[in-house]
Image (cartoon, rainbow, N blue to C red):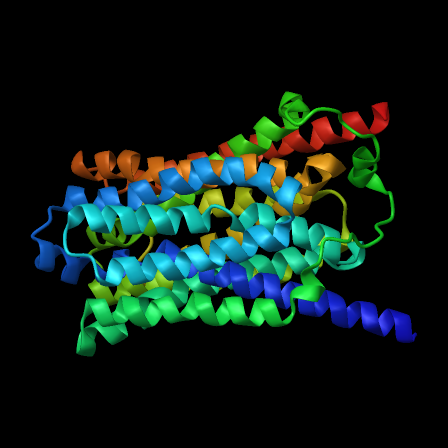
Length: 409
């Protein structure tokens, strides 16, 4: 009983520490966007120049994420995680003292570099340091903390910039990663590289057979299907983050306040969905089925929103429902990837497949921006629904491929 209690406490501590780090990484996804009104005026920038700041963040993060997985497998997840958190703090300091546009670009690129290490490091630590029975809950908490980071950034930055200026807001934001780094350092022994014993069941049995060669994992079809899955879901997410509020205002004649409430409802419902999705993922091994059902419901609601048939109040509810469905799929998604990843290539697999997330977030504004420029605001939700359906197809293929490999093994 004592050993079991200690395992629960250690699992909870690892989950909390990794979740804290993940929250600060998502906070830095929005380190500049909420401050665009102040930065635009300070440097006389166009909207295209402001958009480029976000694009370079995700380009650097996407490339770095694919590469950082190799570093995680070689040097260990803890050291790479510490580096990433440190980069975020330094990037905010650099942005706070920027005197021209190239300095803003450099600071955004540095933030992207810091962000690139989190998914390979986080998932390697969770897979190695958390008991298998609690991995579903671990992935659920991981997703929730990311959403909370997204939600906290605009409130924190705009609140400070409103009375003290945008430079002070960035300076205050720089303190957060260093506080997180100090906490991680205090509990560094909990994040050591030794792996928790996992029972060899289901998809995990695939990890027993060693796959030789540093790049051999890239020959696995499941890896590229996982990449495609993340790209599709990121395209849908990017559409919601960038243009859902604008689309709702044009299609339903909403006020800015109601459109903002709809987006907030999406994010909060997504976090709630991840919480429930963690319990679902812990009780089943049919993760592709969970993803299929969750995204099917979310996609149908997105298409219903596109029709403009419902009233503004119901549109807000539907936005929350889309977020809830997308959130439920999160923990099952992460366990599906874990099942597809060879044991000796965890960091590399997560790095490559999660670079699909950054790729999608970098491409999404271009597509959805073109849709809005063509004056088709309802198509935003049509595209979101289509990308979610395409994500279902890739998830089903990943599940089928993984099961086939398990039978062959």
